[in-house]
Length: 263
Length: 284
Image (spheres, chains in turn orange, purple):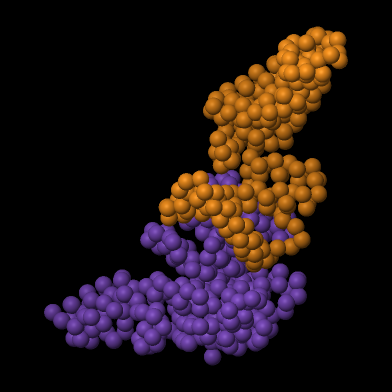
């Protein structure tokens, strides 16, 4: 999975026609529930979001799980810091230990309380990621920007986001071209050469980015650049009763579940 | 004398940090209402000249005038110039700014502070005219080079400029797309826009243009009708621009054929075919 694929999916998914405001509102409401609720609620949200992303939006399963796994890897990297504790063996505290190892004079252990904490954190992370993936996969970035503009976010922020988004692909394109050029001219042979070529690529990328910036500035001036970047979209969205009904009913059910399991 | 729409008088310009002046006393007039081609080899200053055309670059010496009045380099006046003179860059990547096709077309209109409804209408109309309605919500980085070129042109044409400057618009385009582009430029010209195209493709220039300018090393060396340009064979060859293929073929035909078919050198394949046909009939 790379940026470009993610981007095209967000433009081609089956939920594209829904108003972006609705999708963002829906996902934000769920994230709020995730942050305030308990594990049962979070598990339910995970599954429900999966149904939306895979079932309704028709995002390929491997992309959805690929995204979750990739993002979870950051959580996994943080695990040792959350789980492991170490003290000198003779001053070991009287807490319940799930596992413990003696290493020389030290005792390294995993407290039972940490495990339940990680369990809570895991489901919270999973559910938030699921909601976040729903936004990423179903709302194109250009539409997120439009919603942000409607929300009266300062113009400078939306302008910067728009230019950054445009430049991500310009730079990806340039670096890909450079990489192909290096490969086809016999570069990237062996570790040292690869390192040198990557260094050259990064330097060239910088030089070319500056040149692109200069050219783009002239391009914008030629098109009558004023104080801010303003654009309008033609895309019209249509509301769907079926999806609105399901999202509202689902949220109510989730709140009831939370209340019932003792929120 | 023809009335010049845009006139450059003795323009000098050197890029800061560059290796010497790019424009060295260039004087050139663009006749109103004509299809013009600016010929010149790579690096002779065509692109720099274009950036002078709508005031993005201010000449270090000399003067640029629009319909007889010198350009003002004040912010508001420049904003107005960018609307009258549309500039299409060689690399469309340099002028596409927004994230989707429709948004990008709307950019120039938004800069003019038009009401949203008018903007939507205009965007829709131009996308229809350029056959890009289906692409309206496609992100720009999903487009092919040909589509990006068309989009850049649409984004400029939506402002209805009086003069359209195109920098090497046919570079890297295949035959089919080149034909399409020339047809679009003809339509634009028919609607009353003066068009100036920079190119080094002699065949396209002579087939399409009604006015030919030739630049070399930052100076204008020739300006006139295509027939006059074709008479300057030595000049064109000394600049390594060469002659259009059709003119060379014409030259290679037997003397009597040419006399039968008329003295004028044909500019396009169609014209050559027609002339030969009438010539043959006359010989028989």
